[in-house]
Amino acid sequence: MRKIEHIGIAVKSLSDSNDLFEKLFGVAPYKEEEVESEGVKTSFFMNGPNKIELLEATNPESPIAKFIEKKGEGIHHIAFDVENIYVEVERLKKEGFVILNEIPKKGADNKLVVFLHPKSTNGVLIELCQEIAD
Ligand code: ZN
Image 1 (cartoon, rainbow, N blue to C red):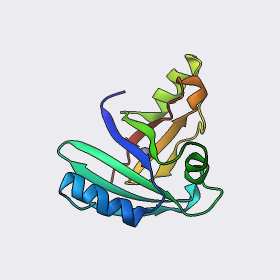
Image 2: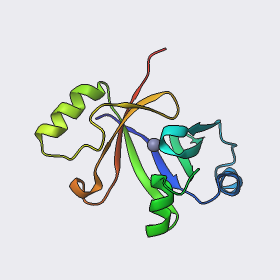
Image 3: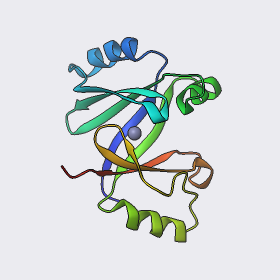
């Protein structure tokens, strides 16, 4: 794994939170994107070298809706940039981590993504992401 790619924050209202984080960072989100398969609407901010993803549920079955129901708004996941997501999944499987989706799927912001189950990572939802080459 290389650097932290972004930190994901679960929010109830993307538009309210966009306003809040725009005030906090002094920049507007550079992108908004809906990922239908995940039931989320996302926005992305760059603050210096750091990327923050906000996630709002688009339906009550969405993992984000369930997260907010249980824990309220807040940090939802930490995403790490990996060079080769397939190699990394094999390595982590051998180490005994529970992979939520062994086959990488297309996530927001032009990435292939895999999630590790928080029960195998001390309660932290970890996302691996690899930039999709154009
Ligand atoms: Zn993410």
